[in-house]
Image (cartoon, rainbow, N blue to C red; front, side, top):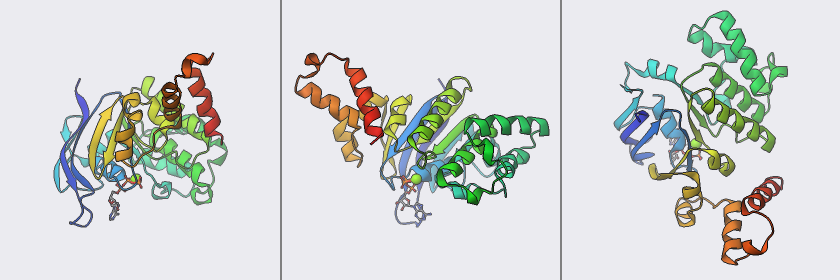
Length: 276
Ligand SMILES: Nc1ncnc2c1ncn2[C@@H]1O[C@H](COP(=O)(O)OP(=O)(O)OP(=O)(O)O)[C@@H](O)[C@H]1O
Ligand SMILES: [Mg+2]
């Protein structure tokens, strides 16, 4: 399988002293849903800004769909990669929610009827129908995130980067967006990179990439990575509650004595825990 994104030996520094990205290489494949996990300051947002050419690397290369990112290719690449930024305030350009969603599409010269169709679909998907004529700065953080997601989806890019784009949503809202991501991947043939601290979401991804100090420390299936306590600890991350619990139950040999399946128990406890 050919990678849709191939990054080789990437370096970046904001101050020419400390490396925010330090010799990072990674490949992301078509229709993959990859979750990037890492402690605050590990370089996740910097990496996403490098991929869309908002920052220029000190060294190294980024290849998107066979095109090396450069001044000549950056506009083409931006058509292929949509991003929802970590802080939704940095995303808004329109005076109303509607203007804002339409703005990106106008830039891509999408036909009017098609624009209308997409606005309707995506504003519905993020459940913000009643706010089309609201001013973005009057919305709550979570509502802004929903609008930013609708705006990015309306552009119909092949690759989507979500940088902690559900951090301000309530559990129900998060679940709603997570199932939207699943739908995009399966029905929409999208490649998805989600940067998140939401372990629940990471568990659903095809692959988890762990970052630390500007590097990729590990990459693998969610259950491999999320059950590796020493590895997670080393990256300053906590092991998911459900994993901790199942490890304890196993350690005390209690699972045989419980008349429930381990999976059901872990799922129920997860729900309880998230409602705390
Ligand atoms: N605009 C900036 N100017 C200077 N340094 C920056 C800037 N943005 C980030 N950095 C530094 O670069 C490093 C990586 O930051 P980055 O924002 O990429 O981390 P992150 O993994 O996205 O963190 P978080 O989980 O908090 O969003 C940090 O050491 C940070 O201090
Ligand atoms: Mg960040």
